[in-house]
Amino acid sequence: MPLSMLMARTPTHGLKYRCFMAACIMMGAGCLSLAGEQQGTPKDPVLPGEYRIGAGDVLQIVVWKEPDASLPGAVVRVDGKITVPLIGEVSVVGLTPTELKEFLAEKFSHYINNPVVTVDAREIRSRMVYMVGNVKKEGPIPLIRPMTVLQAIDEAGGLGEFARKKKIYVLRKTDGKQVKLPFDYNAVIKGQHLEQNIALLPDDTIVVP
Image (cartoon, rainbow, N blue to C red; front, side, top):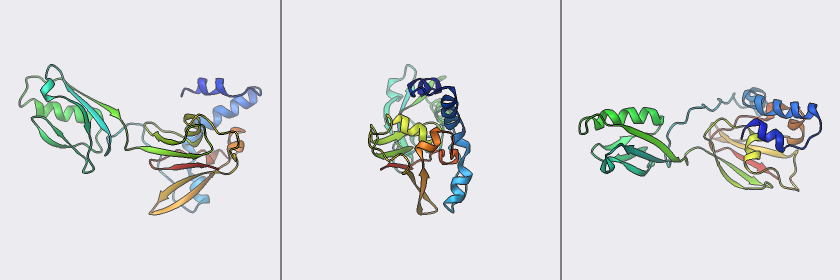
């Protein structure tokens, strides 16, 4: 959601409050280090902005004027592959849509003159974070771009009426162990403890008591 829209939906308590809200959102992605140190875990990588295909994603592959070579909805299997007409099995996990498009165009060129290929992700199921508890809309949230805890709460429609705003936390699996990362909503929207507004990683779970 654009920053201007989020701020427009935020109750107006003066310019100072709005500035704090802007700082919360823009600075969250860069505030991982201290949160990691508090939990005794190494610094987490910031989620790359460019989408890469993962298992479970649904791809649409269109070869212009070649419907028999096109795929309206190819689900990436757990082995990371899809089956493409004329070409056969193709490993796609870890590729961007552009990289896959270029690969397929080269392969199709053996059978089709000057193939024009487009690749789109119809559904992204491989990169999710999960929102549970006292929010307006529980469930998975596609992680298709860098997203902080505060932004994920907004994606879930905001906190519920009886949410314990100081007791929110993120569950994250690190080195095979699950760690609990605190998030004080009241403090963060006031511009305090911004290090808690971490950038989320796939499979993070945000718990709102």
